[in-house]
Length: 457
Ligand code: PLP
Image 1 (spheres, helix red, strand yellow):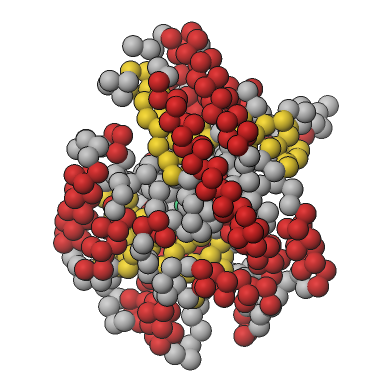
Image 2 (tube, rainbow, N blue to C red):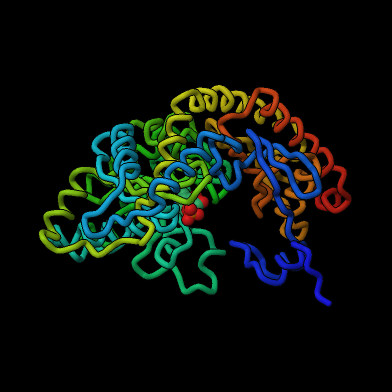
């Protein structure tokens, strides 16, 4: 007789995203049952601080009745309206206008998607269309940055530069190119910000020249690389890359799926850099994860070129759930919460988080601490001088994740032995201090772990 327990049903039927199918069958599922503010509870009654805001998305925190109300009201009134056939609904129109008003420069035109991956995918399609409309269809080559993540649709996964998203999937395509990451802690050129920035500019220039300046369509950047291990570029790096793209007329795309909506302090991280990308992608914090939604923002010149190019013809790109009214109603309420105090709280809490994590540098296992605002990483090593990472055989990702969970902390644990932090912006000082204290406890326990001791130098 097959067991009917949730864990058993999960094992038999639910495919988890980005997971080892076999590994998950063995480990089983941890079931979350509730959330309030910055804490979540699991099915065993444990209360945990969510130091990762779900998947870098629940920026507003859990349990906001006003968000629930906004969704319910929209569902009661009008749960769905298509944007096809010149139709629409109030909430997505108001949301598009609100984003355009707040986004840098003339990013005035908004295309709503269901999440980040299809936002990235949409930019690829719009950019191809843009260059056709400009009479330069040969501009069909795309460049992104090593360690970058731009989603896992077929085309976006090829811009992503993490092997796990390529191997066995037949991507990247030959029109998708990469330059090296800035990754200051492990950059072979050292950690001098100017040296690294100059080298990246030179490499991108060389790449554009090698492909052919009249062939390059766009360059993609995360203002802070997230899934690659929270890699913060040197101050001025993003601007230098943006300027180089402008020099060559290459479209510059800022992928703000993680960094948007207060994660680094301002509403968008591009505002930290004082730059205006040609296109911007967002998702996650847009609805704070309460419902799915993403958005592509485009500058006037991109919109106008596409519009003129198409003329009376339809631009054949769209989803049934583009500009979903319920998601838009949620996003409008989430935006009101950000501007009603959450952004400000996030900035205060972010400074405390960065200072707190910095204090862990004295720990024998800590090689690097980096971040900005409510986005951070602690990179573990077994030898500080040689910067030797935890070896894969000790399975750092699951080992560290499990140990943190036991201490009441949800934290992202990357395969290389990096802790990633992206707590909700509503965190109290006490919760931030607990994130740091629990991390130290996890580090101490890891240091005592016989399997870790065996690889320590
Ligand atoms: N772009 C970036 C920078 C991301 O971090 C992510 C997801 O983490 C995506 C795109 C894809 O977003 P989604 O998972 O909503 O499809």
